Length: 130
Image (cartoon, rainbow, N blue to C red):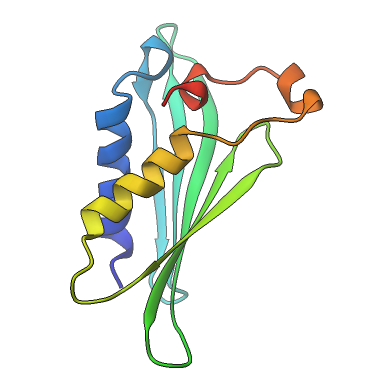
């Protein structure tokens, strides 16, 4: 499955939509385990003072359904938030993987509304940008 290339496309889409979070730069890291069909893009921003603030993650899981259809699930999470979102991408011949990566990135950038307790915690302006 396309774990690394899909993560790369998500990261490029995030850079295109918000090239400088909080007036700083992206500070992301990737972890991939091909044996377990898992990948993770940890998202963070480095501000002008050099401080790195974790922003959240996109975790991918690739698997095959009982009917043989391949699926890639993207789990979206945000730092200081208990909210999560899941995007499923089903492989088919006419699938545009780059467009799907853009949808995942857009879903992450457009974080769900926070609860009152989450709103009290400091949060990156990147998440509120869309």
